[in-house]
Length: 457
Image (cartoon, rainbow, N blue to C red):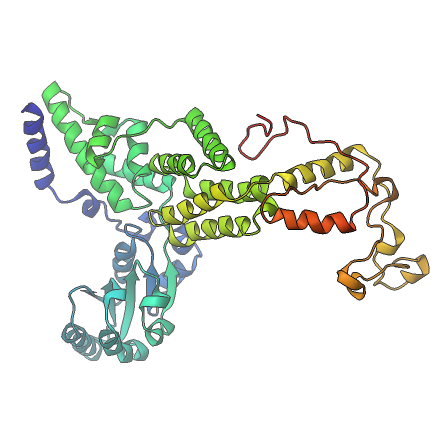
């Protein structure tokens, strides 16, 4: 019952004040965090605003990255009037009313108009076409905001008359800075792990961070009032309650242990365990780009030529993380993880490069055979460079027997394909064209792999 009373008191505290995100809305472009690539000194959008030479633009980015804030600050920094419509509920009639006011304003006072159109991708073709003549003539400077890819959702004629600026999800440092601004505004303090939990779950969204922080502060304030403390202090339990989620323990040691378990599960061809560790990392706020990098490495280290698609799938997932972002990119990562876990395995590429490095570092280098040397520059022929080189494409099967390494290293074998998956075909072809090996040594059983563990353990 007591908890319910304190929850009610927290709700009353929240209702008595304006939303923290609204109170902390930046008043100057310099106050905007996380978009330095657009608004930093000398950056493109900032340069246009400072010179008051902004033409129509489309701001594309995830929720909570500052699209509305930037649009309002652009208007305040310019000599133009500001009009705002939401594509969710605006009609063609509303658009025409804005155009009429813009014409009157320009004719009576020589003042231009900036129209901020939120969720511009929600405008249908007829609504967008109604805007086009005014944007084209310069009567309206359109600032459109969208969370969707404008190349798919905005009419090409309108998009072609606008400059596209892409806003990034806020990184952890930017979100921590936003959270500390919020704490200062609320007159509160917080434990580092509480702030970390809030920003980890925000998905790059500053508004989400501040909304969750406001609830956490309200809970802490009620506890402070009950305990006779003057300053609310947010602890991890407050952050968890505000988000409705429990923080998984995921410190430095856990990071390396979980990543190691993740890599070993994929290497061990267990898709279910692999997905569990993926979910645990993502739920703990692990950087999706870090996970994607590990998958790209694993595709070559543990699968190699046993599946010729493995590296392509891992690379595609990494690109999807950059292009789509979380939370949707978790599907792309899961797709790649299941593919890699169920693919045939071979570490022979990893062993091969280890053997090659061993010879490079521990054996005489030897000279490049004359027939392999560059023969394209003037005078090369007088040195016999390229003499005797046999062009493989002139021979049956696109192959000809000739020496490709220094004499002392000829016949050394680094890559020894397995019979797993697609690598079996590689083994079959090499068996017909390779000389007999002069080395059969395996790499050190304790050679390091990409997850920081040993391959032989």
